[in-house]
Length: 287
Image 1 (cartoon, rainbow, N blue to C red):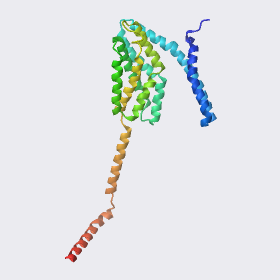
Image 2: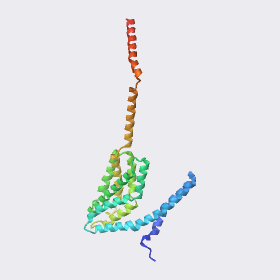
Image 3: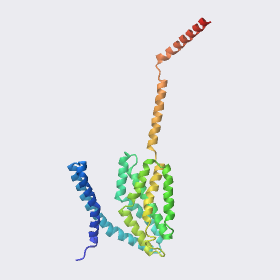
Image 4: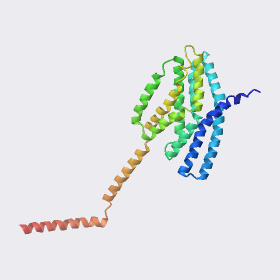
């Protein structure tokens, strides 16, 4: 009996997912007596691991039988046609869609919003990463069509990132480099890289190994640059709070100086005259 297409290679995916989840289970059981974790927490964690195992199993199987074949077919069809330039806009759309649908990107975006107490919105990070990956995917397809070396893009890109670190807000620095890891997830890597490899196999003078790969490096670079740029142009909440605090302190000091009792103001001239009279009497006595 022939295995349906959707379940082809299912055993290999099962081994890979088991190898990924099993160490987490072993560590959980190992640390439980050390940290004296509550039984209810352990039960919920085991349920979560079971759900993650099943979900990851079917997700990776779907990626293997769905995303990768269709990516290679799209790349091969465009690379073998007279409209190879269409790889650039198609790459832009695929880069945006793949990053927008990436689960790790959405988790990072929500974590950033929670950690910043809503100061950095999750939608802002999500769309920033999606647009950044879309731009560099189109740039990677341009590299593939015209055949210039990838280090012409990667080296200046990372040098620019080091310069931007000086001017970006510290809160966005860690987010930028974490974004590079989550943007290169299973959807973007399998779909976009498959398109690039498929196109390189059909384009004249291109090698699938030399020209088809390397686009993942650009995908990892884009979030760093875009998030650092966001840290430069985004309002600095810490600076605004410091400025408002400084203004509040200065206005408070002015109020303390100017807020004098009216009765005390009336008595000030009288005291001044008495002090002046005493000074004159002393001078007369000395004379």
